[in-house]
Length: 441
Ligand SMILES: *Cc1c(COP(=O)(O)O)cnc(C)c1O
Image (cartoon, rainbow, N blue to C red; front, side, top):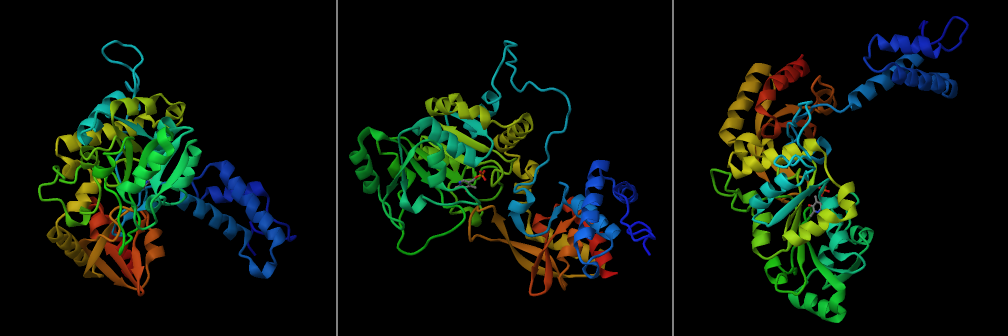
Protein backbone atom coordinates (compact mmCIF):
# COMPACT_ATOMS: atom_id res chain seq x y z
CA UNK A 1 0.00 0.00 0.00
CA UNK A 2 1.21 3.48 -0.91
CA UNK A 3 2.25 5.15 2.32
CA UNK A 4 1.37 8.65 1.16
CA UNK A 5 -1.88 8.11 -0.63
CA UNK A 6 -3.77 6.24 2.09
CA UNK A 7 -2.65 5.41 5.59
CA UNK A 8 -3.31 2.09 7.28
CA UNK A 9 -6.67 3.28 8.51
CA UNK A 10 -7.65 4.17 4.93
CA UNK A 11 -7.52 7.89 5.61
CA UNK A 12 -6.25 10.28 2.93
CA UNK A 13 -2.76 11.74 3.48
CA UNK A 14 -2.40 15.19 4.93
CA UNK A 15 -2.06 18.03 2.44
CA UNK A 16 1.20 19.02 4.03
CA UNK A 17 2.77 15.56 3.87
CA UNK A 18 1.80 15.21 0.23
CA UNK A 19 3.12 18.68 -0.65
CA UNK A 20 6.44 17.85 1.04
CA UNK A 21 6.59 14.60 -0.87
CA UNK A 22 6.01 16.50 -4.14
CA UNK A 23 8.81 18.94 -3.32
CA UNK A 24 11.31 16.07 -3.67
CA UNK A 25 10.62 15.90 -7.40
CA UNK A 26 9.27 19.32 -8.34
CA UNK A 27 11.12 22.60 -7.85
CA UNK A 28 7.92 24.63 -7.72
CA UNK A 29 6.88 27.13 -5.04
CA UNK A 30 5.47 25.40 -1.94
CA UNK A 31 2.13 27.23 -2.26
CA UNK A 32 1.59 25.60 -5.65
CA UNK A 33 2.48 22.13 -4.38
CA UNK A 34 -0.01 22.61 -1.53
CA UNK A 35 -2.64 23.51 -4.12
CA UNK A 36 -1.92 20.37 -6.19
CA UNK A 37 -1.97 18.22 -3.02
CA UNK A 38 -5.31 19.68 -2.02
CA UNK A 39 -6.80 19.10 -5.45
CA UNK A 40 -5.56 15.51 -5.57
CA UNK A 41 -6.99 14.74 -2.13
CA UNK A 42 -10.31 16.38 -3.00
CA UNK A 43 -10.39 14.40 -6.22
CA UNK A 44 -9.94 11.17 -4.26
CA UNK A 45 -12.96 12.05 -2.15
CA UNK A 46 -15.19 12.45 -5.22
CA UNK A 47 -13.92 9.88 -7.74
CA UNK A 48 -14.86 6.22 -7.61
CA UNK A 49 -11.90 4.16 -6.31
CA UNK A 50 -11.78 1.99 -9.44
CA UNK A 51 -11.33 4.87 -11.87
CA UNK A 52 -8.53 6.77 -10.17
CA UNK A 53 -4.79 6.74 -9.96
CA UNK A 54 -3.34 7.06 -6.48
CA UNK A 55 -3.51 10.44 -4.79
CA UNK A 56 0.23 10.73 -4.99
CA UNK A 57 0.31 9.93 -8.70
CA UNK A 58 -2.46 12.39 -9.40
CA UNK A 59 -0.76 15.20 -7.46
CA UNK A 60 2.48 14.36 -9.23
CA UNK A 61 0.73 14.57 -12.57
CA UNK A 62 -0.72 17.99 -11.73
CA UNK A 63 2.72 19.28 -10.75
CA UNK A 64 4.34 17.85 -13.90
CA UNK A 65 1.69 19.35 -16.16
CA UNK A 66 2.13 22.70 -14.49
CA UNK A 67 5.93 22.59 -14.84
CA UNK A 68 5.59 21.80 -18.52
CA UNK A 69 3.21 24.73 -18.99
CA UNK A 70 5.73 27.25 -17.60
CA UNK A 71 6.97 29.61 -20.31
CA UNK A 72 10.28 28.43 -21.71
CA UNK A 73 12.32 28.09 -24.87
CA UNK A 74 11.21 25.45 -27.35
CA UNK A 75 12.67 24.31 -30.66
CA UNK A 76 10.35 25.07 -33.55
CA UNK A 77 10.60 22.12 -35.93
CA UNK A 78 7.16 22.72 -37.48
CA UNK A 79 8.35 24.55 -40.58
CA UNK A 80 5.94 27.38 -39.76
CA UNK A 81 8.31 30.34 -39.54
CA UNK A 82 5.95 32.60 -37.59
CA UNK A 83 4.06 30.10 -35.45
CA UNK A 84 1.24 31.73 -33.50
CA UNK A 85 1.41 29.07 -30.75
CA UNK A 86 5.17 29.55 -30.47
CA UNK A 87 5.16 33.32 -30.05
CA UNK A 88 5.42 34.25 -33.76
CA UNK A 89 8.83 35.78 -34.64
CA UNK A 90 11.61 34.36 -32.44
CA UNK A 91 13.97 36.95 -31.02
CA UNK A 92 16.39 37.54 -28.16
CA UNK A 93 15.35 40.35 -25.86
CA UNK A 94 17.70 42.74 -24.08
CA UNK A 95 18.41 41.43 -20.58
CA UNK A 96 20.29 44.19 -18.73
CA UNK A 97 18.83 45.11 -15.36
CA UNK A 98 20.14 48.65 -15.51
CA UNK A 99 17.86 51.65 -15.87
CA UNK A 100 17.46 53.13 -19.35
CA UNK A 101 16.83 56.56 -20.86
CA UNK A 102 13.38 55.38 -21.96
CA UNK A 103 11.71 58.72 -21.27
CA UNK A 104 14.68 60.99 -20.65
CA UNK A 105 15.57 63.70 -23.14
CA UNK A 106 19.34 63.34 -23.19
CA UNK A 107 20.10 66.86 -24.39
CA UNK A 108 17.91 68.74 -21.91
CA UNK A 109 17.79 66.22 -19.09
CA UNK A 110 14.01 66.74 -19.01
CA UNK A 111 11.18 64.25 -19.44
CA UNK A 112 11.21 62.92 -23.00
CA UNK A 113 9.12 60.52 -25.09
CA UNK A 114 9.80 56.81 -25.43
CA UNK A 115 8.51 57.09 -28.98
CA UNK A 116 10.72 59.79 -30.44
CA UNK A 117 13.93 57.94 -31.35
CA UNK A 118 12.40 54.59 -32.24
CA UNK A 119 9.68 56.48 -34.13
CA UNK A 120 12.32 58.36 -36.13
CA UNK A 121 14.10 55.13 -37.08
CA UNK A 122 10.86 53.41 -38.08
CA UNK A 123 9.70 56.45 -40.05
CA UNK A 124 12.98 56.52 -41.95
CA UNK A 125 12.63 52.82 -42.65
CA UNK A 126 9.07 53.18 -43.98
CA UNK A 127 9.67 56.42 -45.86
CA UNK A 128 7.12 58.10 -43.57
CA UNK A 129 7.14 61.45 -41.76
CA UNK A 130 6.61 59.91 -38.34
CA UNK A 131 5.88 56.65 -36.52
CA UNK A 132 4.90 55.27 -33.12
CA UNK A 133 4.88 51.82 -31.53
CA UNK A 134 1.90 50.34 -29.63
CA UNK A 135 1.22 46.95 -28.07
CA UNK A 136 0.15 45.10 -31.20
CA UNK A 137 -1.41 45.73 -34.58
CA UNK A 138 -4.93 45.36 -33.19
CA UNK A 139 -4.06 48.24 -30.83
CA UNK A 140 -2.65 50.20 -33.78
CA UNK A 141 -5.94 49.93 -35.70
CA UNK A 142 -7.99 50.67 -32.57
CA UNK A 143 -5.93 53.79 -31.81
CA UNK A 144 -5.97 55.11 -35.39
CA UNK A 145 -9.75 54.79 -35.65
CA UNK A 146 -10.32 56.19 -32.14
CA UNK A 147 -8.00 59.15 -32.64
CA UNK A 148 -9.05 60.07 -36.17
CA UNK A 149 -12.68 59.02 -36.50
CA UNK A 150 -14.30 59.14 -33.07
CA UNK A 151 -18.06 59.81 -33.44
CA UNK A 152 -17.57 59.94 -37.18
CA UNK A 153 -17.66 57.41 -40.01
CA UNK A 154 -15.02 55.02 -41.28
CA UNK A 155 -15.45 53.68 -44.80
CA UNK A 156 -14.47 50.02 -45.20
CA UNK A 157 -14.94 47.80 -48.25
CA UNK A 158 -17.41 44.95 -47.65
CA UNK A 159 -14.64 42.67 -48.93
CA UNK A 160 -12.31 43.87 -46.16
CA UNK A 161 -14.70 43.88 -43.22
CA UNK A 162 -12.92 40.79 -41.99
CA UNK A 163 -11.88 38.74 -39.00
CA UNK A 164 -8.14 38.18 -38.66
CA UNK A 165 -7.00 35.74 -36.02
CA UNK A 166 -9.06 35.25 -32.88
CA UNK A 167 -11.39 38.15 -32.18
CA UNK A 168 -9.78 40.82 -34.32
CA UNK A 169 -12.86 41.80 -36.32
CA UNK A 170 -12.91 45.06 -38.21
CA UNK A 171 -16.59 45.92 -37.44
CA UNK A 172 -16.03 45.33 -33.71
CA UNK A 173 -12.73 47.20 -33.53
CA UNK A 174 -14.36 50.14 -35.31
CA UNK A 175 -17.29 50.10 -32.91
CA UNK A 176 -14.96 49.94 -29.89
CA UNK A 177 -13.15 52.99 -31.23
CA UNK A 178 -16.35 55.00 -31.09
CA UNK A 179 -16.59 55.30 -34.87
CA UNK A 180 -19.38 54.20 -37.20
CA UNK A 181 -18.55 51.67 -39.89
CA UNK A 182 -19.78 52.53 -43.37
CA UNK A 183 -19.85 49.50 -45.64
CA UNK A 184 -18.67 50.19 -49.15
CA UNK A 185 -19.08 48.11 -52.33
CA UNK A 186 -19.75 44.39 -52.28
CA UNK A 187 -18.12 41.33 -50.76
CA UNK A 188 -16.22 40.43 -53.91
CA UNK A 189 -15.78 43.76 -55.71
CA UNK A 190 -15.30 47.28 -54.44
CA UNK A 191 -14.26 50.05 -56.80
CA UNK A 192 -13.13 53.63 -56.36
CA UNK A 193 -16.55 54.91 -57.39
CA UNK A 194 -18.15 52.99 -54.51
CA UNK A 195 -15.97 54.92 -52.06
CA UNK A 196 -16.73 58.19 -53.90
CA UNK A 197 -20.46 57.52 -53.68
CA UNK A 198 -20.22 56.83 -49.94
CA UNK A 199 -18.22 60.00 -49.32
CA UNK A 200 -20.55 62.16 -51.44
CA UNK A 201 -23.61 60.81 -49.67
CA UNK A 202 -22.18 61.30 -46.18
CA UNK A 203 -20.44 64.60 -46.77
CA UNK A 204 -18.02 65.44 -43.99
CA UNK A 205 -19.03 62.53 -41.80
CA UNK A 206 -16.48 60.17 -43.27
CA UNK A 207 -13.21 60.80 -41.45
CA UNK A 208 -11.18 57.91 -42.75
CA UNK A 209 -10.99 55.18 -45.35
CA UNK A 210 -9.69 52.02 -43.72
CA UNK A 211 -8.08 49.49 -46.03
CA UNK A 212 -7.43 46.05 -44.54
CA UNK A 213 -5.15 43.44 -46.04
CA UNK A 214 -6.83 40.00 -46.07
CA UNK A 215 -3.83 38.45 -44.32
CA UNK A 216 -4.97 34.97 -43.53
CA UNK A 217 -7.03 33.97 -46.55
CA UNK A 218 -7.27 34.35 -50.31
CA UNK A 219 -10.40 35.06 -52.31
CA UNK A 220 -10.13 34.22 -55.98
CA UNK A 221 -12.32 34.46 -59.05
CA UNK A 222 -14.50 37.50 -59.79
CA UNK A 223 -12.88 39.78 -57.21
CA UNK A 224 -11.58 43.31 -57.28
CA UNK A 225 -10.39 45.67 -54.61
CA UNK A 226 -9.33 49.29 -54.93
CA UNK A 227 -5.59 49.79 -54.57
CA UNK A 228 -4.22 52.42 -52.19
CA UNK A 229 -2.92 54.38 -55.19
CA UNK A 230 -6.53 55.01 -56.27
CA UNK A 231 -7.93 55.46 -52.77
CA UNK A 232 -5.34 58.19 -52.22
CA UNK A 233 -7.17 60.36 -54.77
CA UNK A 234 -10.20 60.56 -52.44
CA UNK A 235 -10.79 63.60 -50.22
CA UNK A 236 -10.27 61.71 -46.93
CA UNK A 237 -7.10 60.15 -45.50
CA UNK A 238 -6.47 56.46 -46.17
CA UNK A 239 -5.22 54.28 -43.30
CA UNK A 240 -3.95 50.89 -44.48
CA UNK A 241 -3.74 47.92 -42.13
CA UNK A 242 -1.11 45.91 -44.03
CA UNK A 243 -0.88 43.36 -41.23
CA UNK A 244 2.32 41.44 -41.76
CA UNK A 245 4.87 44.21 -41.50
CA UNK A 246 6.94 43.73 -44.63
CA UNK A 247 8.89 46.99 -44.66
CA UNK A 248 9.85 47.30 -48.32
CA UNK A 249 8.89 44.95 -51.14
CA UNK A 250 12.29 45.35 -52.79
CA UNK A 251 13.85 43.82 -49.61
CA UNK A 252 17.08 45.88 -49.82
CA UNK A 253 18.41 44.01 -46.76
CA UNK A 254 18.58 40.75 -48.74
CA UNK A 255 21.48 39.89 -51.01
CA UNK A 256 19.21 38.26 -53.56
CA UNK A 257 15.96 39.51 -55.07
CA UNK A 258 12.70 39.55 -53.13
CA UNK A 259 11.71 35.89 -52.60
CA UNK A 260 8.68 34.82 -54.59
CA UNK A 261 6.68 33.85 -51.48
CA UNK A 262 6.51 37.56 -50.61
CA UNK A 263 5.18 38.66 -53.97
CA UNK A 264 1.60 39.28 -52.79
CA UNK A 265 2.48 40.99 -49.51
CA UNK A 266 1.82 44.72 -49.27
CA UNK A 267 4.82 46.62 -47.91
CA UNK A 268 4.89 49.68 -45.66
CA UNK A 269 7.18 51.79 -47.82
CA UNK A 270 5.30 51.21 -51.08
CA UNK A 271 1.91 51.69 -49.39
CA UNK A 272 3.05 55.09 -48.13
CA UNK A 273 4.57 55.93 -51.54
CA UNK A 274 1.20 55.07 -53.05
CA UNK A 275 -0.38 57.76 -50.91
CA UNK A 276 -1.65 56.10 -47.72
CA UNK A 277 -1.79 58.67 -44.92
CA UNK A 278 -1.02 55.92 -42.39
CA UNK A 279 0.07 52.28 -42.40
CA UNK A 280 -0.37 49.91 -39.47
CA UNK A 281 1.41 46.58 -39.06
CA UNK A 282 2.48 43.93 -36.53
CA UNK A 283 6.01 43.90 -35.13
CA UNK A 284 6.16 40.13 -34.68
CA UNK A 285 5.29 38.91 -38.15
CA UNK A 286 7.48 39.59 -41.21
CA UNK A 287 9.21 42.44 -39.37
CA UNK A 288 10.72 39.73 -37.15
CA UNK A 289 10.41 41.60 -33.87
CA UNK A 290 8.62 41.48 -30.52
CA UNK A 291 4.85 41.64 -30.12
CA UNK A 292 3.91 45.21 -30.96
CA UNK A 293 2.19 47.28 -33.61
CA UNK A 294 3.59 50.14 -35.66
CA UNK A 295 1.70 53.16 -36.97
CA UNK A 296 3.66 55.14 -39.57
CA UNK A 297 2.68 58.01 -41.82
CA UNK A 298 1.67 61.69 -41.79
CA UNK A 299 3.16 63.57 -38.84
CA UNK A 300 -0.08 65.40 -37.92
CA UNK A 301 -2.09 62.16 -37.82
CA UNK A 302 0.60 60.31 -35.84
CA UNK A 303 0.61 63.22 -33.39
CA UNK A 304 -3.18 62.93 -33.02
CA UNK A 305 -2.75 59.20 -32.25
CA UNK A 306 0.06 59.89 -29.75
CA UNK A 307 -2.04 62.52 -27.95
CA UNK A 308 -5.15 60.33 -27.65
CA UNK A 309 -5.82 59.04 -24.09
CA UNK A 310 -5.79 55.44 -25.37
CA UNK A 311 -2.14 55.84 -26.47
CA UNK A 312 -1.07 55.66 -22.83
CA UNK A 313 -2.97 52.42 -22.29
CA UNK A 314 -1.55 50.91 -25.45
CA UNK A 315 2.11 51.87 -25.09
CA UNK A 316 4.76 49.14 -24.96
CA UNK A 317 7.43 48.78 -22.28
CA UNK A 318 11.15 49.37 -22.57
CA UNK A 319 12.03 45.79 -23.58
CA UNK A 320 9.87 46.15 -26.68
CA UNK A 321 11.22 49.61 -27.49
CA UNK A 322 14.83 48.36 -27.16
CA UNK A 323 14.09 45.47 -29.50
CA UNK A 324 12.35 47.67 -32.08
CA UNK A 325 15.25 50.10 -32.01
CA UNK A 326 17.83 47.39 -32.67
CA UNK A 327 15.69 45.83 -35.42
CA UNK A 328 15.18 49.17 -37.16
CA UNK A 329 18.94 49.76 -37.06
CA UNK A 330 19.55 46.27 -38.50
CA UNK A 331 17.18 46.95 -41.38
CA UNK A 332 18.65 50.39 -42.05
CA UNK A 333 22.19 48.98 -41.86
CA UNK A 334 21.13 46.09 -44.13
CA UNK A 335 22.32 43.49 -41.64
CA UNK A 336 18.86 41.96 -41.19
CA UNK A 337 19.83 38.51 -42.52
CA UNK A 338 22.66 38.40 -39.98
CA UNK A 339 20.84 39.92 -36.99
CA UNK A 340 17.16 39.03 -37.32
CA UNK A 341 16.26 35.41 -36.53
CA UNK A 342 13.22 35.49 -38.83
CA UNK A 343 15.23 36.62 -41.88
CA UNK A 344 17.98 34.13 -41.07
CA UNK A 345 15.57 31.22 -41.22
CA UNK A 346 13.65 32.66 -44.16
CA UNK A 347 16.79 32.93 -46.30
CA UNK A 348 19.00 30.01 -45.25
CA UNK A 349 20.11 28.08 -48.35
CA UNK A 350 18.67 24.64 -49.13
CA UNK A 351 22.20 23.22 -49.44
CA UNK A 352 22.91 24.29 -45.88
CA UNK A 353 19.69 22.67 -44.61
CA UNK A 354 20.61 19.51 -46.51
CA UNK A 355 24.06 19.29 -44.95
CA UNK A 356 22.68 19.95 -41.45
CA UNK A 357 20.04 17.25 -41.91
CA UNK A 358 22.69 14.76 -43.09
CA UNK A 359 24.86 15.49 -40.07
CA UNK A 360 21.95 15.11 -37.66
CA UNK A 361 20.87 11.80 -39.19
CA UNK A 362 24.44 10.44 -39.20
CA UNK A 363 24.98 11.37 -35.55
CA UNK A 364 21.56 10.24 -34.34
CA UNK A 365 21.60 7.05 -36.45
CA UNK A 366 17.92 7.44 -37.13
CA UNK A 367 15.59 9.27 -39.51
CA UNK A 368 15.66 10.02 -43.20
CA UNK A 369 16.06 13.19 -45.22
CA UNK A 370 12.98 14.57 -46.95
CA UNK A 371 11.99 17.67 -48.87
CA UNK A 372 9.38 19.86 -47.19
CA UNK A 373 7.51 23.09 -47.73
CA UNK A 374 7.91 25.61 -44.93
CA UNK A 375 5.26 28.32 -44.61
CA UNK A 376 5.60 31.93 -43.42
CA UNK A 377 2.72 31.54 -40.91
CA UNK A 378 0.91 34.08 -38.69
CA UNK A 379 -1.40 34.83 -41.58
CA UNK A 380 1.46 36.24 -43.65
CA UNK A 381 1.54 35.36 -47.34
CA UNK A 382 -1.29 32.78 -47.18
CA UNK A 383 -0.81 29.92 -49.61
CA UNK A 384 2.88 30.72 -50.11
CA UNK A 385 5.53 28.09 -49.34
CA UNK A 386 9.31 28.09 -48.97
CA UNK A 387 11.19 24.99 -50.12
CA UNK A 388 12.88 23.25 -47.22
CA UNK A 389 14.63 20.09 -46.02
CA UNK A 390 13.59 18.00 -43.07
CA UNK A 391 14.02 14.76 -41.22
CA UNK A 392 11.23 12.20 -41.25
CA UNK A 393 10.71 9.45 -38.67
CA UNK A 394 8.27 6.56 -38.95
CA UNK A 395 5.62 6.87 -36.26
CA UNK A 396 4.13 9.69 -34.23
CA UNK A 397 6.69 11.16 -31.81
CA UNK A 398 5.01 14.53 -31.26
CA UNK A 399 4.38 14.08 -27.58
CA UNK A 400 7.78 12.47 -26.82
CA UNK A 401 9.57 15.33 -28.59
CA UNK A 402 7.41 17.84 -26.74
CA UNK A 403 8.52 16.26 -23.44
CA UNK A 404 12.21 16.68 -24.33
CA UNK A 405 14.22 18.80 -21.83
CA UNK A 406 14.18 21.53 -24.43
CA UNK A 407 10.81 20.76 -25.99
CA UNK A 408 10.86 20.13 -29.74
CA UNK A 409 7.64 20.98 -31.55
CA UNK A 410 7.32 18.89 -34.72
CA UNK A 411 4.62 18.03 -37.22
CA UNK A 412 2.87 14.73 -37.98
CA UNK A 413 1.29 13.49 -41.19
CA UNK A 414 0.21 9.94 -42.10
CA UNK A 415 1.82 8.58 -38.93
CA UNK A 416 5.19 10.08 -39.82
CA UNK A 417 6.94 12.74 -37.77
CA UNK A 418 8.57 15.61 -39.67
CA UNK A 419 11.21 17.99 -38.34
CA UNK A 420 11.71 20.96 -40.65
CA UNK A 421 15.31 22.20 -40.51
CA UNK A 422 14.44 25.70 -41.72
CA UNK A 423 12.76 26.71 -38.47
CA UNK A 424 15.29 24.94 -36.22
CA UNK A 425 18.10 27.31 -35.28
CA UNK A 426 21.46 25.73 -36.28
CA UNK A 427 22.73 26.07 -32.69
CA UNK A 428 19.99 23.66 -31.64
CA UNK A 429 21.00 20.82 -33.99
CA UNK A 430 22.95 19.12 -31.18
CA UNK A 431 19.82 19.07 -29.01
CA UNK A 432 17.85 17.55 -31.89
CA UNK A 433 20.53 14.85 -32.29
CA UNK A 434 20.25 13.93 -28.60
CA UNK A 435 16.48 13.85 -28.70
CA UNK A 436 16.47 11.60 -31.79
CA UNK A 437 19.04 9.27 -30.20
CA UNK A 438 16.79 8.96 -27.17
CA UNK A 439 13.79 8.13 -29.39
CA UNK A 440 15.80 5.45 -31.18
CA UNK A 441 16.84 3.77 -27.93
C1 LIG B 1 -2.10 40.05 -37.85
C2 LIG B 1 -3.00 41.10 -38.29
C3 LIG B 1 -3.69 41.89 -37.37
C4 LIG B 1 -3.55 41.66 -35.89
O1 LIG B 1 -2.27 42.02 -35.50
P1 LIG B 1 -1.75 41.71 -34.00
O2 LIG B 1 -0.35 42.26 -34.01
O3 LIG B 1 -1.81 40.24 -33.83
O4 LIG B 1 -2.64 42.44 -33.08
C5 LIG B 1 -4.50 42.88 -37.83
N1 LIG B 1 -4.66 43.09 -39.16
C6 LIG B 1 -4.01 42.37 -40.08
C7 LIG B 1 -4.25 42.66 -41.54
C8 LIG B 1 -3.16 41.35 -39.68
O5 LIG B 1 -2.51 40.63 -40.60
